[in-house]
Length: 543
Image (cartoon, rainbow, N blue to C red; front, top):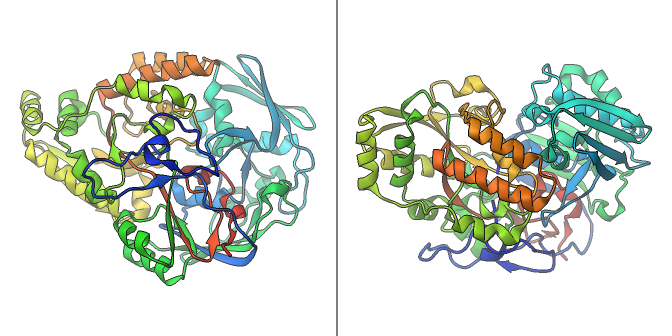
């Protein structure tokens, strides 16, 4: 699952609480019923240290293997344990991480100079050999990494010095470098990988990275516990809390109760059904942060009913996005105009509003949609949409899509699956068999919107429905070869226009990121950058 945020500028800072229209990609829609809200990258800084916090996840991670981490729960944990060559900051900038600098001396070469004196959790020192092993593992078909396609243009990964690694490419690939700030750029101990083998990152096992926290225990079905890494290299991110314990609560009402009772000190991706309750409580505060995610409908089968563009357009026209926002997002959000939200356009945010003005409005026209279905000869044809209790928003959107489809003559059937089965849809092609549509929260891990649009390339792992368009592929290659941010941004807009013309993904709405913090804690980043930024290190005592 990948990709949202802004209208005019994304220059949010830790000291500035901005209006939602300025930085979330989610303005306050008229008549939404959601009330006013602001978006800010950080909660107030911690005033002291804590021995322990408990953090609520909406689901148990299916892995702690960095090469398999492709969803919110595993990345939320690993953000504090493993690190990348580059780092995405809470205000969605890219800065040095385990690499102190990077150069692109030739369009087909990326060179990374590594940070000296960095130690893994077992005390061994990071070298170029560790980086080479970690990155090559992503490319190895035996690993089966969902990030493997990020390396499709890589010819070689070489150690070119004790603290230098060089990537040699078959074609220019600017996005590959930016993804060194996400899972593809993660560094693990080569010796530890070799020793762990197939048991790496599994429940009950260990990982051995360089982050501010080390994995202590993983009691499957119960909790994951992290402990402060005393040898952590980045002193400005020395943890303010000694131990972080993650608990897994799938039921939205039960999870809300953990916040209100103080059983959990906080959690990201708060159930929208609890917004009003959590905004009113004196037990803590609900924060809205920058987001790069949009709620979308991803087409999984282009050989079925939705293989006809007219049917995809009709389904999009039938959606009442404003009412979906009220029901699924607590009124906090705006209708999406594209598969990427405005917030995903952080490369050159000043251009975002202009780009989105170029896109056609997504009209709500049931009568027109019904005519399209009839023209396509699709009246009465089945569309299977997968749903789950994984998040309340999924069920709400699924019911709305079913109702909209039936209004225009489509037989939309809902297939309910368990939360773990829902997550499998995004990593296992076999889990998609017999399905036409899935509700996704597509997000960018980096500030570049091109990252999202890579997932629509022919053959990309994230191209769930195997959509293919040679015009699109060619346009993507031009964008990915553009070193100049302005040129790349303009070329990415062309990809966005193709995506909206062909609708391999049907956009629904954008909403800000959320985090709830109990009254005794503060300091957490509020936005989606927490998926790779060591967010737990900044949490401490509120008083």
